[in-house]
Length: 164
Image (tube, rainbow, N blue to C red; front, side, top):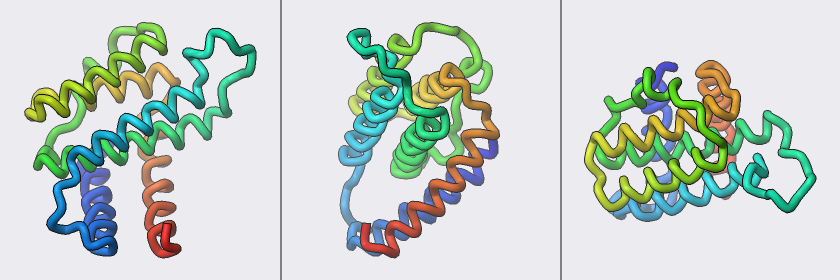
């Protein structure tokens, strides 16, 4: 996956949004962290992995991938906020350890909260890595993620033009 390209695309989108909404001088770190936590919750909801009381199946893979990519947008944006644009996930680690989906969601939540409390570069990398592990557990390839990210990035620009 070409993280340099994704960071560049996200940086341009962030600049566009912050300029359109008069947020260039605002500190958005906490809002981006909360947005990421919400997106992870929406993703978990689409997978239904924690809904032991329900027989309903998870959403289609395309819907889950779109929700997953929403999280990638905010992880990249947080990296840009902290000037970690050169930091991607640990790819060897991202493809290791196959644990349960609910367990990985909880690990992702914990890694986000750890990063909020301790926003160092290494902690960011660990958070990003845990999220990529979740993507692998969901069955997404790097190509799936990158293609979907680029499509959603375009949608996000269109939404901004429509007053989203």
